[in-house]
Length: 216
Image (cartoon, rainbow, N blue to C red; front, side, top):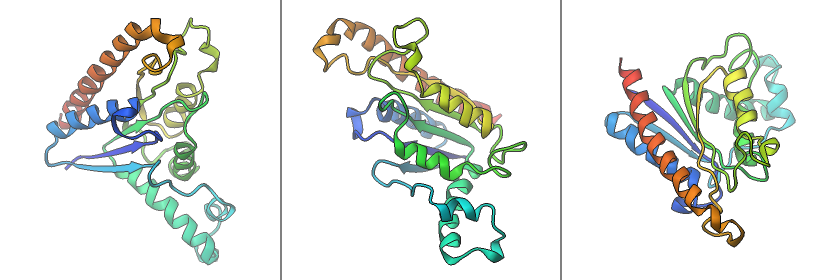
């Protein structure tokens, strides 16, 4: 039985969120290929994970027999999150751009699962796990655009998810999502619609391809 770890971080609900909508399309196609599979869904906007505290951080460098009750409790939550990542056959992450970067709730999740000597380092425990990130954004930060230098979502996640955690990473990038609601961007609506259609098509295609790859 395959397991998909699905993480949402958009503060917007349902179809109001491009990252949620495209991720849902991926998940639907995945479930059609894996009707007996399991999906672990973490909605970080509705149920945020704890931000890293001194106790949660220091516990990782303290012998279990010497941890304080506070350290043990905080580290226990980190272990649960790390185990979810390690046991997943695939990972799906909705990562909308918030003020040029990822939502703080997603950063908190990453801080919890990032542990040198276990999930990160020379032999990451989830190395090779396929991961798809839906990185939506209100404008465009693609190479050659005026705001190319403001792109801190894909660049950051490539370093953390692929470089440090060793995940097999792919991106789906719905862009210009503010065009339909921002009068100043009205002329970009056709480009937004093309990007949206491509994102949904990519989500379905990647989900099916990944399902076939894991079944092989």
